Length: 213
Length: 213
Image (cartoon, rainbow over all chains, first blue to last red; front, side, top):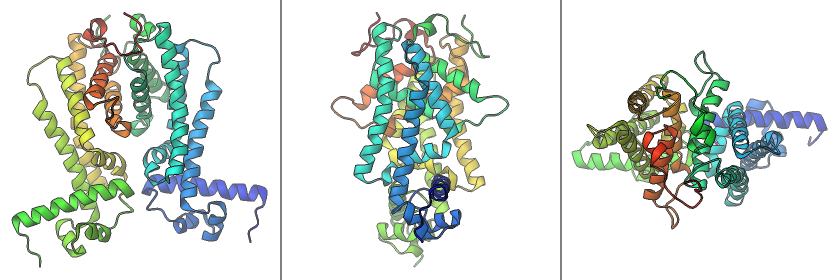
């Protein structure tokens, strides 16, 4: 008992997390029991508690890793140079790709904040805030350089995040819409929203219902 | 027992619904039990089942009423005449006002679709689809008249709904932001998003960070 062998342990821990994401996204955090989770993974409840002493530890770790992975993904694609419009495009593309790949985790991260203790809620909200701050910095830079034309940086940042996260609520790739196609359209809508100068002049894409030249 | 006196019964039913909205928004549908709900309302579980034979009946009724109330609110404010831009503004204002007033119900409606039976899910999705169809009709009219300039009617409709429903996730009126102020900014962002002609020419609102004349 209590053997914490390296790779075996890591595999078990990964299996617990994976099962937890699935169960919580499906039933809601409060409805899922550690017993149910242990049964799904095929371990004793006692083994579960060795990895995650409480159910809330598990929720917190899932949410923290989701946000850390998002911030990591950002720093991988962030163009070190490039103008505000290029940086905004990279932000939007990364955001959509990341969330489409992680629907269940995104659902949990958006829905289960209510179940975190105040201290842990603060940790998660700080990570979110760091992420949103990057977007606000891009918007501010674009507004200052004249590349963007917008009313309120904070509200525009929230509007963009809500709009592009919303993709995962309804979007399933099919014959009409690919991930690439949806990303392209959302990118174009984001550029409109910020009054990007290229959008004002040349960025219009034809697609069926557009009438004005 | 089993007395179904008019106004007493109605009051009890309303109390059950109100308590259910609060409990489900707080803990998630699956985690809430009928016993817990009865205790909150101060009735026997048997009384609860007289009004709502199953817990899923209750969830379905809450979700259906939410959507019906939204559609009703729409038909009350819908301008019978007016151009596409006026109609879009009325749609957005109503949507934000309605959802800010009904945070808990909105949370439930967005999150607990997973717990409906397939037949009932279809009913709710049809109501949603009727609502979204109105928005698409406004966008199509505006695109055809040249008032709007947009790429894809369906994706733009989803983007607008996600963006403006997102307000309730983070917005709490405070000294910096009033409901009216937030609504005004979101209205302006919506008009940008659809490439409204007034926005292209005169609709820009000054607010701190705007630099371009």
